[in-house]
Structure formats: structure tokens, C-alpha cells
Length: 289
Image (cartoon, rainbow, N blue to C red):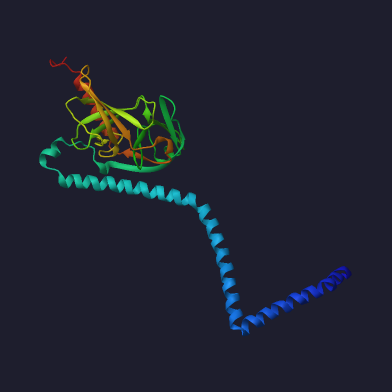
């Protein structure tokens, strides 16, 4: 107890000095308008900077949630975009067009947001892994796109992850069409660069120009019709081949992929069954044997 009293006695002059200083500032700020305004401005500036620093820290730690929310909103917007395009196509159809139109409509597609956590670029067979799996609704043979176009197809799925075959894989085939003419072809990648693909099975009489838009044909269960893939760089004709070689600059920069979207075709199983039956019918001989 004696020590406490001794310490208080030692610091009493300092405490008295601080109290008198505070009292002096209070009197000065209250009865002198100039000093009152100056002190108020300085205190407001300090408090403002303090709260701004706190908000910046909160915003930084909230970026992850913000990115997830934006990715979810983008997936919802893509789904709505597919539905609107489907409705517009219905309004613009004629009876003749409806007869030959595919059973796949854009309204049959759902979109899930995901993030790439692994991506290979230097192999002849490249793959990437996304952070969504079966618990998130991801299934095998779903198409994967970025905001710039198709990037791959889901090959295998675990509970929380999915492995996808990249479009820059020599085994990948993407059914495409020329936007201005609806001419169908197959886009493949032969490497080594990740920015270019080649259209195969395009007849030589089809003349393309540099800059012509290439988009998905809709002739598969992976992607809806009309997703832009890239643009024509050049067309090479050979007298030894029946088909032209068309080089396409892909919209996607595969070295910078991060946020992606997985597309689910709700009619996929039904369509695959129809196509399987069609394959069996083509093997039946005309005499029925």
C-alpha cells in the first residue's frame, strides 16, 4: 500500500500538469472560435482517417466474398441470357426453320460458377481442375466456359473438385459454325501455341475472310449454340485435300483463366439416348438383316 502511495506521489505533478493542459484546451476551444474550429477540423480529420483505415481493412478481407458473389451473379445472368436468346429464337422462327431446328434450346441449360485451381499449358494433352464437384451439382461431360468462350469439358468428378479436358488438348473436338454462313465444322488444337486452333472438315468451296466470327454450333450436349469461340486468321487451300485448313485465333487466353462457368444441359441424357439409337439404326442393312 505504501508503494502505491509513493508512486502516486511521484507522478502527481505529471497528472496535475496533464489535467491543467486538458482544462486549458477545453477553455480555449470553447471561448475562442478560431481555435475551436481548428481543433474540430483536426479531430474530424483524424477520426475520418481512422474510420477510413478500418473500412479499407474490412474491404480487403471482404474481397473474397465479393468475388464469390459476383461469380454467382454472373452465372445467374448467363442462365437468363440463354433463356432470353431461346425466346428470341422462337419469336424469329418460321415454320420451316422450326422443322429442322435442334431439340436443344438455350432454356434447357443451367450455369454454375467455379474457379480454376490447376491449369496445365505446356503439354499436348492439357487439363485443368476446378473447385466444384458433385456436391455442387457438377457432373461428367458438362461444358466449361469463361467470359470469353468455351475452354473445356468435365471428365471426372469428385465430391468437391472436377478434372476437365482443356480445349488446348489434342484429343479435344469442338463443334463449331461460321457465324455469317452457319457452315458447320470441327475445331481442334494441334499446338504448340495456346492462342490458335484449326477448323477441320470445312469444304474447300467455303470461302472465309480474316476476322470472320467462329461460334459454337449447338450440335453437341456440351455447349448451347452461339457462344463465340474466336475469329479466322487465315484459310489455306490444298489441291491434295478436299477440305480447307482454317486457322482460328481463340478468344480465351488460357494462361490467364481463373473464374469460369460450368454448363449443364438438362436434356443431355435424353439426347444421348436418341443419338445412340440413331447410331444403331445406321448399322441396320436395307433388307432388315
